[in-house]
View 1: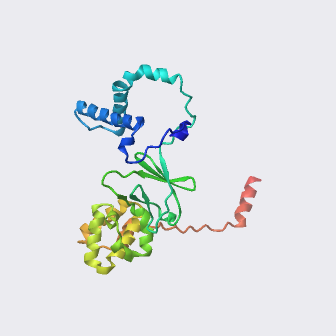
View 2: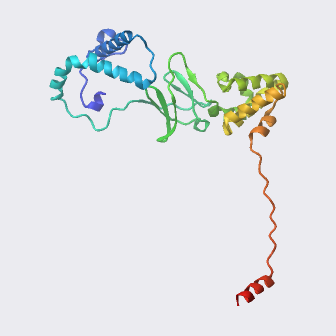
View 3: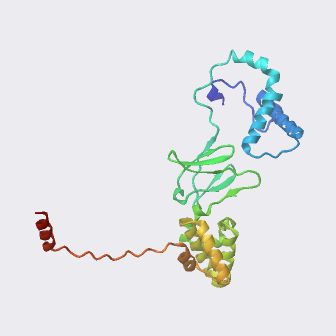
Length: 271
């Protein structure tokens, strides 16, 4: 912030040293207290959307804080330099290396990324509510930033390519519960264990790979039909037969070769 606005820090405030808090830190604490009091007076912490909450915070600060110091703000603005043309970044940047399980660690939390990035260094832009994944200055994906007790976000589409090559790793995969997109997929895996034994992991990983390559909704519907119609007996081949579109047959069209007499007749008629 100091570098962006072009002014020097007088002294450094050390982390976790409350006795060193400066004017900015104190104002931040008072602002949070002001918002808490406004929520109590409002009678509820529930909002229809994040945008509605942001409007509430803005109105609270404008009405209960800024109006009391409006005169001093106007006085100081006359002595302020113009703001930089480029706005201050609203994100922080991290550059982790993608691990062999197609994951990166950001702010003590784990996110999966496309498997093609394994072994490469990527740029992560951490926004207040989202995470941007970039590689070679190109945006790859945007996903929600984890908060609270959530410590990992795994998209099976990112890791399934590795598991297909080594299906035996499925049993000991750290985030295996994330590889059941819906309850139907979980039921399908349990049915495979009951009917296929040790080969259940191979069959399920192939089904999950099919879901990643086609449409998850179609695979889920096929699994539900097979579970209901066949008493829980299913396998990859049965699911694939219902999901993959059948190749349409190309009709054989016989076009007879034209004869020269036909052309002669046309020429004679024209004459």
